[in-house]
Length: 279
Image (cartoon, rainbow, N blue to C red; front, top):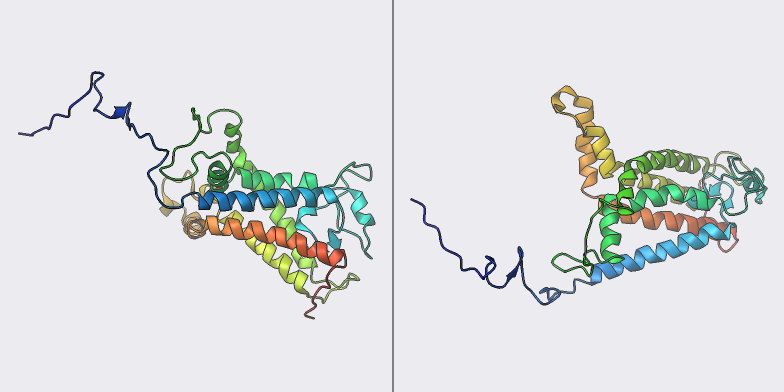
């Protein structure tokens, strides 16, 4: 025999003090900690990056000092890049030619921006920091209606996997930039400076960010009913899963480092600082 306790109800059949299925709490939140610090810091960092990246993309100068090229401008899609001061010019793909009316970085940044904006971690970051949806756990959001990612424009987030493929190709190009950074200023091999290390770390952090991505984990191990029948993919999946645990930290490090890489190349190219040469 099972005993059941009768719960008092109001006239509409709901327990007293409840509206629908949620408790009727008048306060925005009952949290007493400084829950607003994390979304505020996230907003400050992301907004600062957006402002700087926009300025760097439109300024259209000081992005190349042979053999260093800013990751914001690589690969350069306009042939006018080859006219930048330097004995061999900027490595470029002459898709737009000299007639291109604006900075080629505006086209380049579409890929990393689309990749990060649709990333699972960054969705949470800017949803909470910019849209307050919600700003923190157990804190109500100000929006009256929530449709999630089922309607336009947020349904566009589903293109993340395709940006993953484009980001993968971009990482190959940036790795090439890091390799040719071992050349001298006159184009000869046998050089290594601080800029070389900066670009090498930039490529490493971007590859780490891509490898720890949720889409990467899904592509490698998704849709497999039996891991035992796919030992190689299972081995890769287990290692990507380990990286995936630190996806948030890697995302921040790679974001800040790519901005620092542009700053360093810009300072060297403008003559503000001198590249420290190791050998």
